[in-house]
Amino acid sequence: MHDYVSWLRDSTPYINAHRDRTFVVMLPGDGIAHPNFANIVHDLVLLHSLGVRLVLVHGSRPQIEAHLQARGLLPHFHRDLRITDTPTLDCVIDAVGHLRIAIEARLSMDMATSPMQGARLRVASGNFVTARPIGVVDGIDYQHTGEVRRLDRKGIGRLLDERTIVLLSPLGYSPTGEIFNLACEDVATRAAIDLQADKLVLYGAETGLLDEQCQLVRELRPAQVPGHIERLGSQYQAELLDAAAQACKGGVRRSHIVSYTADGALLNELFTRNGSGTLVAQEQFEQLREATIEDVGGLIDLITPLEEQGILVRRSREVLEREVQQFSIVEREGRIIACAALYPIPDSHTGELACLAVNPEYRHGGRGDELLERIEERARALGLKTLFVLTTRTAHWFRERGFSPSGIERLPAARASLYNFQRNSKIFEKAL
Image (cartoon, rainbow, N blue to C red):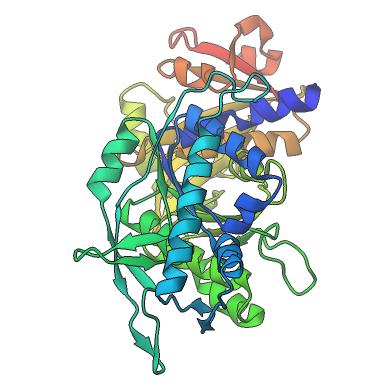
């Protein structure tokens, strides 16, 4: 029970951060056929219930193979891409149609034994994807195999605004009424880019990307992906990596690769600090780090306006130079845009969080939460048990993040003796 409570408490910042965000989730046909599919559906419905705007893209490769085999047809590939002749297209249409109905039915379940009992949601699918033929490559005509031309962004956006889960299949349509067989990775990547999604989640058979020693690679930058793709060759994992990198290059902030075989992989990836898969993230324009003496000028520029408004206690340059090692900062392209300080209180197992400030141009981006998490990590590393904060204007913000009202009698003597009764700051504390 304690582990469950701790996990739920630790996940709260992520729940807040993910609300009203747009996630594109790609689930291949193998994942739909896997016994863990039912759990994946529950996790997706849970995301929806937490306010995430969901676009679900499904694949159909093994299901197409089954339909081809049933009709005595042989599959044909070139460069690992299916050649879709007219008989194969009929199998593709049958397989995708059955899958779409099966997924919609699963998302519509409301059984007493379901973890999401009582969850009411709507699922919409349709002709959202316009496609074009791949054409002839190396003298090979791909026929009805196509690639994404564009998505109906406005139509999908309206449905997401109405709290509807949008389901995209690996079929696309041309303005002349033709049907094209698409790679689900292509659909998911283009959907994430065109919708300006906050995340692209790609399900695969593996936990994530494994290195040469079969150890999980937890985080990559897009520039690092080509080297891993070369190592992997034509493996499906390389296709997922390429899709993740392309999405990030197209403006998607983060792409995640998780396993469809592991129960709860999606939730662990999105709601825990370490995650469960591989993250491919854009190049960092921002850096969260500890301050140095060279940062004093930038700190003064950031906090002086707040000091003039009486929100922060005034600190002279001399004080900042002496105490700069107490600060953690967020630096963006050489500019300090947020800061917070940790002051251990002598003769106690407590510390004070002070001078939490975010540049007004960069508020509502979660930087305050990132700094709070960094300060709490530093406090735990020092063996501190309790974190105090004194504030005059942001009491609600700290209460929403687990701080409880306290009083001067709870402050250690070394800090209580310095309390400024003129400021009349409210005191809050949080157990670490």
